[in-house]
Length: 295
Length: 232
Image 1 (cartoon, rainbow over the protein chains, first blue to last red):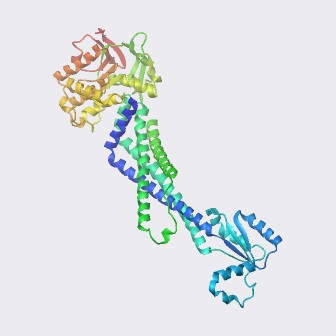
Image 2: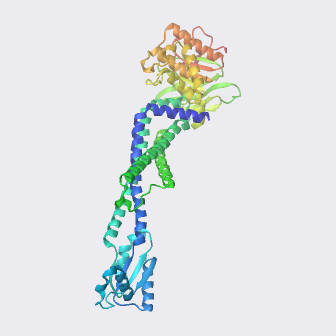
Image 3: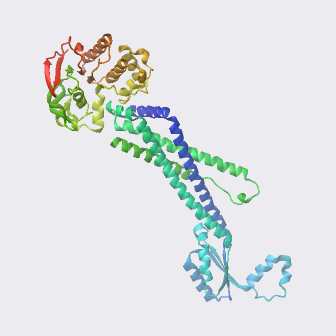
């Protein structure tokens, strides 16, 4: 217990003596956490949007002629050979015409002179409702277009491709910002502690000479690392929540952002980001202290 | 510290110390110092007095021979064991080793802080020591702003602050006037009377002239006993 109090007094003393560099390190860690968490939040929300869009996503495979039940079964097997799907539905020429009539409503008279089989039969394929299959839609569509008897495959090509590239871009940014977080947390804390050690070399040498144990010298720096990680992640996440909340308020009302419901991190993710940040800062202080106590 | 069987605090057997490239500081020194003894070690500058004291707190390792403190081989002391041993040894260094950008009280406190003493006990002890060494008005002064004599007393205060069982003092009166010298010696004798083993390296004959403690001389790297001591 006396050890803990003695170490905490050392921590307090360190903070008092080097508060400016401590503050700068803290702000750097906070900013890194903020940047990483921002892109991660965007990514998570995009995954969620992808899920929602996936509900409406279906590929329509237009066929040359009405497939007989045996051919339907063959086509079904071929489709499932590519990937699992939510639903496969065969639409006959007749059903296609009925649907068209419903869509035309009062204007369905225009179809009176048309032959009843002018619309092609088709297969409606509903992929699984997750982004993996959403990203695979393009490949899936290419596969379907090569099935025998296929005239054309239709889906929302444009937005799916854009969405796909955007999620790819965001995921790359998430990885890069995670790298930034690692670099700043580990190296900033490590160099900050190394500078502190250089600045306090005489004091630390003296402490050893008057009988300070390695734990007594080391522990305050570890606590410093833990506090930098904890406070840095808290500040970064609070700032991000502030920005998130502001965007939500500012852009509420009719608009594109209101089509989808954006959400902040779930508590386990917040805890995970904080723990990772603490561990990274702790690694920074550990590497510096190990070098010092070894020499 | 352990209860050494024959109450020997310091034991050196055939200890030699050679510095690079080939400077012989100590050569085959053998000596025993009993617990509670006060010993003066004299010798000319460069005779090896500081080296001798440094060997006792493992600031230096002997090139050859055995150094034991309270029955413990100093060469084998590492990590926490060495730390706990050093907490029992108070050293007043010749070059002071003060933190010049810290106050007098901070410099003295450091020796007690590493032993996890309570802040109120530390404050009380610092105050008492400063009064004893006539430095009460320097409590919050930066040690870098003090005179050499004042710095020397702060070093001494730090060495004795933790009530160590072994006190090593290197040239304690080099920068002091006669009155302050008397005051410092009074304190060291008081600590010795309380049971501490005190080793004083000095070439100031005035501080050992009138006392009856053992007097040793380092000459040519070897230890010579000039006067047998009387245990107080």
